[in-house]
Length: 472
Image (cartoon, rainbow, N blue to C red):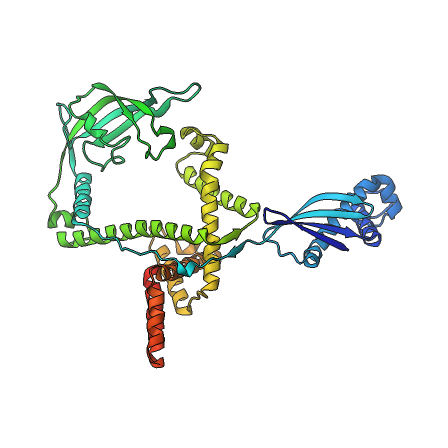
């Protein structure tokens, strides 16, 4: 067998393999036997027909086609070994270059490669987010509004009223052939000046204030020009005309926020406990939002200094994962992908190019960087940490409403365990990156180097503990 390799720019390699006549003839004989086993040849038992008989009945082309399939199944691994190629995904037969001699070309995706730059020199301060009294008060007020009683009124709408209305929206000056509909005519509701019932200030900031003074059955048209910072690209800089028909108006009677209100929630005995719980929730939410932004920006800095190569098949797989999750989410709302694309006014090609592909690239790059950083930093998990993570996940599962222990099998337990370990491992990597970017790890190592040998372990332990705290 003769092997020739040709690297490609898309992180794949073309392998040309040439086989001698003896090898080809051997596989042709095996192919003929296989054909005779799978087909009925008069006068012969399955697999016993002579080669010349099979050849006469089915022809050289059929035998050679079957021979190539058998050869690839058996020889592909040897071809990769001979070419010293480590594939990152299944390869494919590109072409049968010739049959005399038999020469085949394969396209083989290479395993992704990551060469980290000097990521340890990157510095990015971490400013832990806090929870303000104003945030807590706003949250309490939203709770208060959620538990309010609504009383129909026969007057014009005022601030604080719950208003039900029909709403539609259309582009004021649509381009030729452009779908002008922005919001399909349908029911909506809002508390004027609040954000507890529907999305805050939907469909634009200050919209609910436009309802003040309207009575039941009143109609009103409102025009609004969206700014360049609007999240929906289709609406940036565009003027939209909204049509409103008021259906009902209700005054809200808010409960007092006190110990009695806290007790009515069933989890607290005092208002102080309720407030403390809210502060903890908001603190966790703020931290998660901050961490998401912090690490997104940190990975962008790391990626900018790294060299990352991967074949297109790996990106295609990541795109498919995103689509799978999207389809699952849509199915919960009785929607399919085609309907969803129509609702948001885009095509499959545009959606893939503008939404799915960039998201897949970001996820893939981050995943590859995480994997390489974990390897370089020698991130390892202690058995005690692994057991704690797995047991914690299983306890969370058992605490869920409707949990049925009879449906728990080894496969489910293994899946939960793998997910728990993966999340813990990733948390440790993020913790290490944070300690590097903030300079905490460098300071800990410098301190350890300056202390007596008996104290070096303690300093290292403090650095490790800091990483765990950062990750958790």
